[in-house]
Structures are given as structure tokens and as C-alpha cells.
Length: 332
Image (cartoon, rainbow, N blue to C red; front, side, top):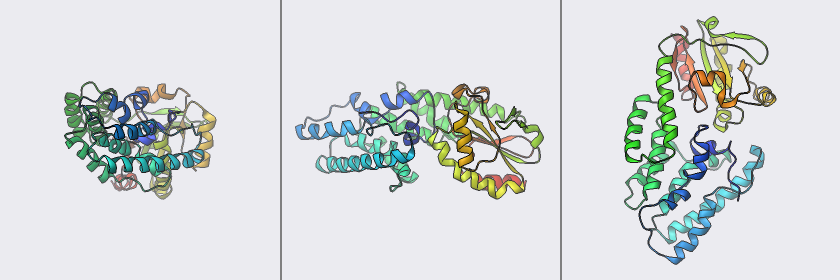
């Protein structure tokens, strides 16, 4: 059985793309792997063990390696249908089996897949409640609780104070979790972004269309600096909202500058044309070693910075409430 492709895993798991997390998401981040490291003994039940064998295979991900969203949708729908059916049957027949928490965690982890294929999405409130239930469950194993705690931390990464507080508590309780590498990266990014906000942002480059872009020449306008890539599912999912906001507010002084983490310039050009993205793009083909990504400590995408009329970065989480935030900055 083939696992999800490298590009798809972040879409289905954490709604961000992060190079340091990708291998861990397959190896140790899944509840299936967590079950192998469980510290609490699972009561012997031959029928439950037999049923779990089928589920354990499903927890490795859907079969196949779809190259496009169109190819992925029927595969994912079939996979989710089978997973839902067998998970429901398992929890109904074995309601006290501790492995039920692994199933619940996995369902929260891949909620992006459900939205992608237009099945009923899992709300943020349901995610928060589900993670809290796992953390409070006396029979959930340590590894499952550890990953649930990790997801709780990542859910508040846009709030520096809350993120740091939860991150410190999480790392104290689960110091061995491999996913802590992403938390460390986020903490480092938060510290870098704090320094960036201390003075006007300096950003100058030649766009893919040969135009010189200099942020210092955009004083008096509100600018969105969008760190993204065509292969990043969460980035692509944000495009309609960004295009809509640009169309509504560009005439009032709103600009966008794209910083692409792509390695294929043709794919970048094709997508910006297809999605009607007229703003300038920076491209150097270096992927995660992108010049500005390295300079600004960007370790996960999408990352959207809002720059006010004075050239100051005032928001490093522009994804949330973008249109409202831009309107407010334009009114200043």
C-alpha cells in the first residue's frame, strides 16, 4: 500500500506545509505508529485484534499516488467511506477498546481530506473538543495523547503568547515526540518575526515578468507578502480568498507580492494564470532554500504577512480574516 504523496500529507494533517515534518508525519505521527509505542497494555480480545488488523492497514493511508486533485477525489472518497464504515463498526462492537482513541485522533488528523473531496467537514469546534477528549481519556496511550497535544499546540500557532505557553507545557510532558521539531521551528520563526516587526520591511527583487519590485516604493499602500508554492495544498486552498480580496480592495490601495517556494517556474506561471493571480511573483527555483524564506526564517507555508502603509509588518498570520484586516489597515 502506497502512502500519501509528500505534497499531500500537510494538506490532510496540519493545514501547513513544513519540510521538517513530512517524514515524521508518515513514520511516527500517525495513530497507527502511536499504537506501536503504547505504554498501556491493550486487553487481549481476539475478535478486536482481528478487526484492528484491517483498520491498521487503512491508517497507513489510501492506496495509489494521485497526481492531481481530480485523480485524488474518487480514491479519497472510497478510502474515507471504508475507513468510516470500519471505524464505526469497531467502536460500536468494542466500545471500551483503548485503540478507539487512535481512530478518533486519526479522523481529526486527516480532516483536510474530507473537506478536499467535499464530504461533510469537521468543524474547528469539533476538532478542539475531540482533542480535549483524547487528552482527558484515562485509557488513551501516551503516544496518542502526545500527538493530540501536538495538534493542540499547532492550532494556536498564530497567537505567539498562547503558542509559546502551550508549546512549553507540551514539550515538558512529551519531550520525545519527533513532531516537536516543528514546534521548535515555529518558535524560532515567531522570534524572527518579532524582530522583523521592529523596522520597515526591506524586500527588493525582480519578478518572474522582469519587473523590479521594491517594497519601499509601496509606502502608502497595504501589502500582503504571500509565502507559498503550487505544490502546497493549503496554499492553493487559500487562493480563491486572496484573489477575491485583491479584486475587491486593489483599487483602494491593496497590493500583493508572492514569494514562491517552487522549483518549476512553468508550474508557477501556469497556476498564476489559471487562478487569475496578477500580482508579481518572486522565483529562484530553490524550494525550501528560497532566498527570502531563508532570510526571514520561513519554515512552513502558507505564511502571509500584512505590511501597513508605513512599511511595517503588523500581522504574520494574514490567512485569518484577511479581507477584514486589509480593510482596517486601509482605513488607517
